[in-house]
Length: 264
View 1 (cartoon, rainbow, N blue to C red):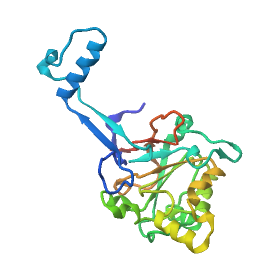
View 2: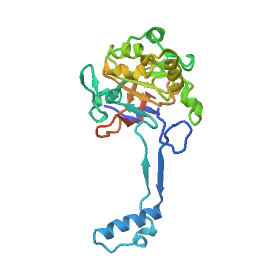
View 3: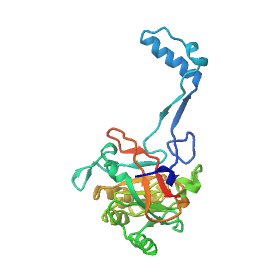
View 4: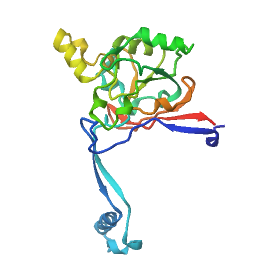
């Protein structure tokens, strides 16, 4: 039986933050304090036929809440197969509310790519080399986490550009071993936008544009972007991880707060 007192939970997420330079489309958050909450709740009750006013609430205050306008790809989030294209290997791609919850729970493996140059691609051979150093073979149901150290730049514009990305081949290589969820602590799963744009401008080859994402049109998987604190994990393998996304009907992604559980 799971006993929470036997584990230290480690939060691996970045939250929704308005006006942060690390988001090209930052969320807008309107905050309603408790006084505003009393007025709005009283108005709702009056609309239902009850003669209630803000001052009728205990101490004249009601409930606080927020109204958020944001894309589902802000903060830490999980991309669904439908994000990459309408079909996967000829079949309809699953939206985030259709992703099996079993995919989001498993043992995580963390690979260290903090040494990798920003703007470059992580290769299949580098994945295998890192696994070899850990004396570990991937197995079905495991969750692979890519540590780049990019989360150290959260809050700055450098967060958007200073990281390596996964290659198409490496993505398919991992998924074909039974991994269904791959996470990264970087802004994106592919190499940064400027690096992709420069490569496309140089070659005219459209395979330079979001190649790791578009691997999801051939193999079914989910990716988690904008994770954090992977360097705080005390080991590299066999890390219990829960990373279930918010269910957004027909959504291409859902916000997630990944929690690792480490035995005390």
